[in-house]
Image 1 (cartoon, rainbow over the protein chains, first blue to last red):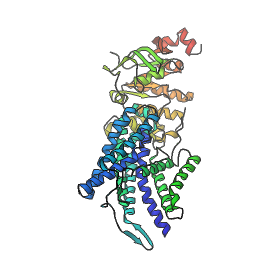
Image 2 (cartoon, rainbow over the protein chains, first blue to last red):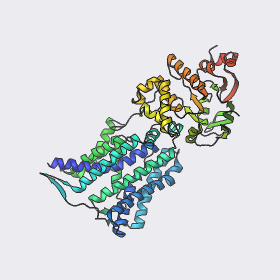
Image 3 (cartoon, chains in turn blue, green):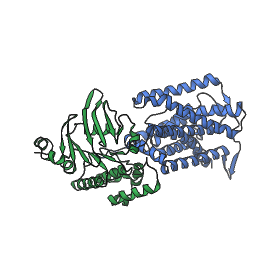
Image 4 (spheres, helix red, strand yellow):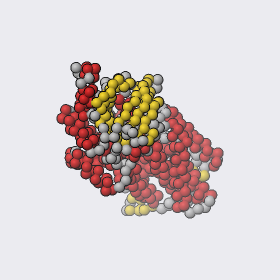
Length: 291
Length: 236
């Protein structure tokens, strides 16, 4: 019974990782860059929740809307100011810029809000659902449900809409997509918008579990989600979902065992093992050229 | 005025000049071929025309409009489509999704259905395989798909880069028959080919390209019978 509830809380943790991993993997697939500032957008979202709900005393749902909107705007601004001028530059320059943006966001948060922890407790959902011996926190259920709906919606969006198809085309062959009349900059912008909005959702998930907001709040989930994206096969949308959920379940199970202290180490070890066995990740595709 | 006018086009890769001042034109309704050996700059010219790589000099006008510095993605709606070298179909999308990508810039359900039906009538195999992932098609089928994808936008000018590359002789004939048919239906064609004999046999006019420069031009027939061209590109 303990095991079942660990799996369920793992699924919900995995849902959070998947939200963030989707941002990493879509941006990588389409813009061919690792956006290491992605985790910090979660932190921006968390501070916005603080400002809206605690400082401005707005209703929770308004705060959530504002947080997601501000994350989206941050995504657009970061892409425009930091990454777009580097289109076509060496990948290393872009990577270092992304790390720079990450530090910049953390430093800005520290200047504006100070380094001491802020608390947003309004999002905490107390209580749990008891099914026989299994007890599941309501927050777990909400996270799980929202994450599932978003993943289905995103899959349908990519599969069925014109813009979604253009995203797949750009991620496979940017120049061929341009020859079809696809505005690559527009597609990259859409990708950042979706990724940042999902980071905002992840910020909400985070504050549902624990109320603490700090400038480095996004760093660890960011790294974990990046790991999840690589495990699933970076660039692959279903891969990010599978990788995120897998990592979440591993984490939840480890936390219930005596080796809980080594959870992070175990997760990163899994990454190394998967990369050794299948360098392109679980669902990543090796692109082959047909001549 | 010609449909496509290229004047003194120059393209460089870093310090290396790959195309050194090339001029040519394509009249409405023609099939024009650019022939030349490997490394002559044929594909570079095609990429530069579609703004996939930047031009370092010269000018290009299309349908009476200067398109020298227009972004790649805006050219399709102006009526210029390209079948790139190596086909470059979207391997992970289905055949139908590839065709939809060809229609990306266009609007209108009815015209889309009509275009799709037209492509399926040209290449019935594509209809049979419409749900199949494009990467699983054979080379010849992929070339058919690449051509149909470009034709979905009803271009005024179709640029074809090495359509015969890597295909069996049977498929080469199918593709060249198709090029003629597309042209008869009103699409102007600019063709780049290493298979000079085949290209010259269907071209109204052709230009010979060598090391980034135009060395000769004439009607397809003239060049087929030209001593130098025969020796250099047609195997004697």
